[in-house]
Length: 267
Image (cartoon, rainbow, N blue to C red; front, top):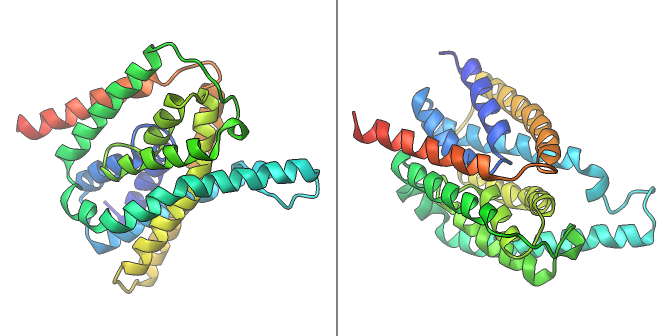
């Protein structure tokens, strides 16, 4: 299989899974092994396509994220700055815990058994939290307090375990604290920008590799595919959750996790 085709496949996988509560990292680990795309360049590639997904969030929510817009009055600009402050408050735990445990997690936990187990556990939690009677006290991100934001960021750190899903952790955490589904999903998108940017920058700075022109081309293809697919997924997902819950993603996680575990132990 050519590297360009692999880049397209992985770009689609990243774009589809990054912002859904089903674990993009877990899917990339599994698909990378399936197409036999591993090593130092594969690690850099996975980081770069994450950056493509990040850019899609910025583009999709640009009006809401831009505090300098001439179309906003002073109160709307203040609300935008508050959004960024809450996002940074949620980022703090990830910076501290991620910097301390990041290398250990990558070395020890990145394997199909851990991914599958985390997929199953996360799926069960999603189904359980959706079955309880949900009372929303935060119908928009502005209703979240700084304490809530920090706690969501703390819960997000569970996503360091491959297969957990950063978006699932933040969505579950936000809903547990009283956020509506749309608010939980939206804040998860916003928090993804600094969290994934920091993680990607760290991975790129610590990577030791010199790339050929063809490898840069492969990175470019993966980045573009990831950006376009992620942008489309965000648009569909935000409409979907207006009238649907997250149980389908929980069931999907459980089925996928059980399938992968079965393929490992029944060989």
